[in-house]
Length: 524
Image 1 (cartoon, rainbow, N blue to C red):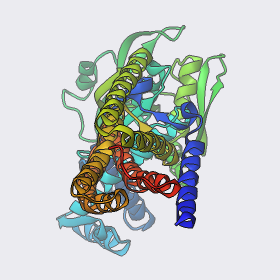
Image 2 (cartoon, helix red, strand yellow):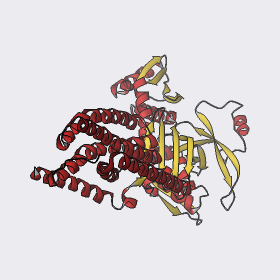
Image 3 (cartoon, helix red, strand yellow):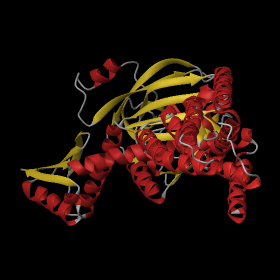
Image 4 (cartoon, helix red, strand yellow):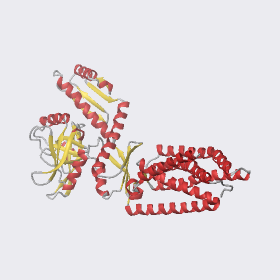
């Protein structure tokens, strides 16, 4: 008997020492959610149609290059007609047959529905491919935002995807929310497009001026973009407009690196280099358009439109009247990965650190008051046996914090509510056991027999009650987000800890007391 008590005692001691070690010091080991230490909460919508257009433009360009490589096919043109459709026009039906054959030979029909009518070949992306591109854009956007946040140095960020092509971002402990907001909301969706109008440097004064140049009707292969007019100090003093080609041969996905630098006029710029595939495409684009302006489009706005003086292969610069901080942030977002699509902010909340401290103080106050009331109740109702329950309760809280630290979980305000609920459920198990023991004592059982039967008969009710609550907590963790998951985590760890302390630890305490002396009457 004593050997059994020794091993059980050593096991309890090992568990408690491990929990104390893992959770110490709590300030460094317990991660606080943004509702406790302040921070930002963002819900972002990914514009997956941007990714579809980029994929469509890319495949259109490949088809035209394949036709050009055939040698015999001359005069083949193409344009995008929708987010996921494009049309290739050949000089004759026979040439169109050849284009369709090229698409089949190089596997394009695995991704596109290809149809031919006369000298026109229409490509429509298959439905499963459209879904794959959209989901891939969301996944890549989430990873890109995570890279940017990591580069900024935010500790323990929570970045998850949600239904409807959305991304939820939680950044606890942010001390410069304005800069982080810019870092995340500036999508840095970079494109290089040829300027078709105006050709004389700078932009047009209005959209109407561009339309007037094209007799009131913009060609289908062009789009109008806005850009800022800046003074010598880099301040925005107006807007100008450009007619750009829809085709995007090179985008931010082709970037290999980006870094801030100083231009020839001592103004901050961003230097970039391209991947081998991007370099080949960029060299072809610039080589075919020497003497034409090339628009650098960032997040749907033209930041500059320099002239192409010669063929450019693998590097270049971005100028836009940046200050040093803007150049640094732009290089950061470009280097960490350009987003495959634009994003918009659906929801934004900022929690100040003072509000977080108030939440902690109120949560601790509620927890302390609740614990004191529970302790008094157990001592008044169950006398000295209540001390056993209080001891088990204290160990339960220690194990809970050890579990939070061990699993690197984040403690939120609902998590504190979960701890308080766990305290109540922990003593609930002891109440079931003690009431069973009382019944056996009233029936004339000896102290040892009453304790044995009390634990035995209460065990099934304790397990049933905790397991059903545990299932609910697991569903909350699986389908909940943010604070709801925080509540589920603390509740789950607390339930497991309470079952250990109520059934195993409190029973060991009773057995330890009974092994020391013969007990005729139990204070319960």
